[in-house]
Length: 328
Image 1 (spheres, rainbow, N blue to C red):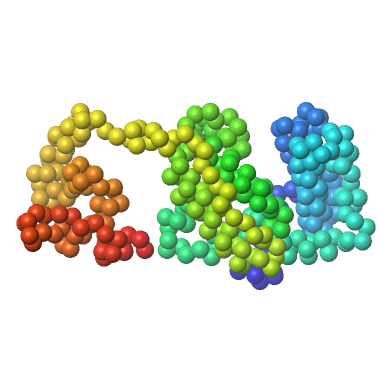
Image 2: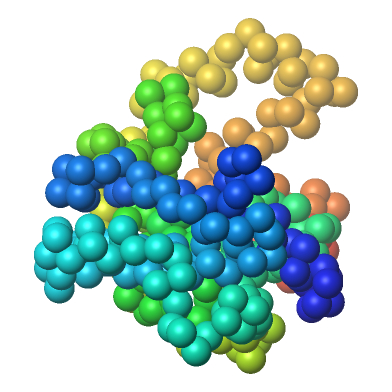
């Protein structure tokens, strides 16, 4: 587990995104955001770390990354000018570190406050693998969380970062794996997409719910390493799909008639071995029940007859055996 110092260090080293080696010398490299490339006259920043030791290069690269990220943020907010940002990012790595702080000390501090990606990986590694649907959602959602917030030390994450994540993620398209978005980052997809965005239900049950689970877990397991007190209460859906979503999914009378008079449906209904294939659409047609409600019905216990009137009815409840099994 990551709480073992040796294992944590090994995992931490393997995830450093800013290092590359040229002729045995380690270099720092980071991409300049598109909005700053013209002002800084650069698409990326590359600096020699002047060391052949990976252990020495890691804290230097991370410190440089933190300073450069700070410069980007201050440049975006107008706190510093283009010239100041250029000057800051042109300094050598040794000048970026206070004279009284050694690379070893910086490295130890960074290991105490690991990167967000390290904490996410630990969370996913510990999550119950038997709960596959939720685990799948987590593995799909949390990398987006990392990309939009930035893979920074956890003690530097702000509530504003989390709020901004929710503001941005709801701008994602319904299918971000579509061919038109191939090769794009999440930020690039959000910036270029101008069509239908994710629905409120997806926003609440996937992006908000999964991040909430992670934050609650990390607040317990990584509080001593600097994980801040964060909240998802600022997650407000501002999309426009909620009003039209039901209308969009409804079937016309002709479509319903085609479905239930189709030769395949008749074939299923005529064979007692496949008649059960008709149950879901038929129950949905005559009751208006949701798919998950129909699926939790147990035909042996949830189809009942009223003693007074003799009318047969479905007993929908979260307390039935099938409903309990569906939730586990």
